[in-house]
Amino acid sequence: MVKNTFFLRDSVRTDSTNQTRQVTEIDLGAFVNLGSTKPQLLRIHSIQIQYCDSNGAPALIDAASTVADGKSAFATCSLTTKSTLLTSPYMPVLSEDETVFTSSIVGTNLNDDKDQGIMSDAMDLAPQHLMNGYLIGVDTLYLYGICDDAWDEDIFIHVCMECSTEPANKENAVNLALSQI
Image (cartoon, rainbow, N blue to C red; front, side, top):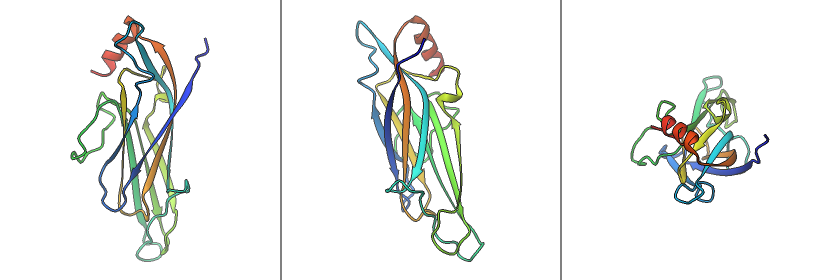
């Protein structure tokens, strides 16, 4: 049976000057409803990610101190079902039950001028890596992002999630409880 899917999009802006974790709350109240006579859950089938500057272009990395000396920069994001105080310095990780998605990008600039350098990215966990996606039973998702100060500009982390809704029943409620203990 083909599911009707839709897309949810949001972003978080990371600050390359003070290197503190930023968060964007994604409201799911229109899709998740557990307190009604027809309870409903959200299933995320896949997540796509983009790291870019404010114009949607690859971000620039600061100049290396000398040609071929190299300057490396990183940015990372996590999507979770639980709010974590921003005073906490860490990023939510794969081993935490509330983590839905993690991704990172690393760039290296070998030039003695600002440049986009050589980029490498990784998705450590994504719903498309799972057999049936990721089932969500909360009203809010939290998109965390952080980048270091080797970037010449702030990094914008954009997510696009392919989702569907489904009625809550005994089977998926048990699965939800076991996966997010």
